[in-house]
Length: 120
Figure 1 (cartoon, rainbow, N blue to C red):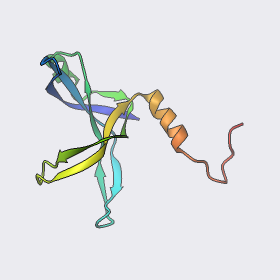
Figure 2: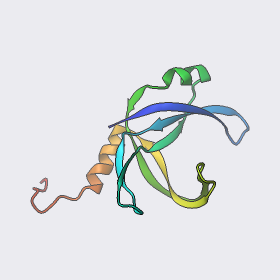
Figure 3: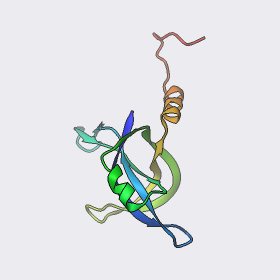
Figure 4: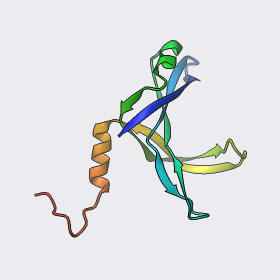
């Protein structure tokens, strides 16, 4: 499980100070369309703040690091789809988690089948 640094963006904090966020992309996933039933390939993306200079962010593009991007619930917000301009309401976001956190999530999300032995 790994993520790839694919880009960076300059952002401004509440004190009007600029900083750079790294744009991360997870591994390829196959998702089934609810409309057509056909599968398509996609990847989750998330951004993480950094203390890096712009030059360092440029050098990091293409690097791989351990971790995972997970879907996390959040307060509902509106999002404009870049392709169509349609405004939709979302109640989740994608965020980076460390390998340790990702392993914990998988342990609690996975339910053993009746054929699997439960750990003692």
